Length: 327
Image (cartoon, rainbow, N blue to C red; front, side):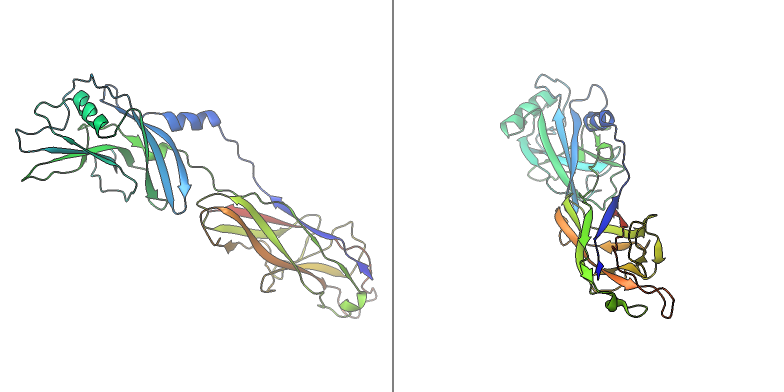
């Protein structure tokens, strides 16, 4: 009778050094020009499924600012001034350049001689206040390397429309979305140990004979929101070299006393998992959580028939490493 011990799996990962000071500075830097009516400060970015939420703060706006503002009545032609959070292409592109949701709009009256100060007073009556924290959602697939976030406006009247555009022209306060640091996608992936059980030498009478498969899984816990794809691969350890990489077979480690058998790793359909080949796992949801990749393992006789040395009973331990990347 062969006494089989455990089949631990080892997680390989690369440690990344992160400069926390640099991240804080990146989140708080203001990409505005001095002496503007207000500033737009970054307040972080988070993943929400297939979207990214970019947060920002509108600040440094005073009711005493006497600078000429954009909400002009144009001698009575315009009666309503709409102010809204918006995105546009740097430095002064159209506000429709990026698909976004979650924008907010306030409507105030126009004035004959508008200033940024009385514009803020009117906005405060409409529910806006300074500092004002808000956010916008943009699909994660969208390239935001040239995207700005801030405020835009339009003016309309009984018989005249308006165009939405950032303000003030030509240097609107702009937060460059690419400056916001996105959290890395990750999961907690614990080591796996599989108890293979006990088997008889007669189960391995001929070359290629196998034990019954033993089910196990690679667990991914506390996965990030926004994780949509996992790439993974298995590889042999130096302590248990590959016997047949294509068939997912590795040798027993040097501490094992059994002879004539090896270990084979299979997928959930009992097909061999090729070593050093990248496989794809798609989580059932991209909103984070815990998942698992089902697999199987079994012992297989790799000793050819007709040899002078039979399969020998003993302990049979092995190791396989798994490497994962998250997208």
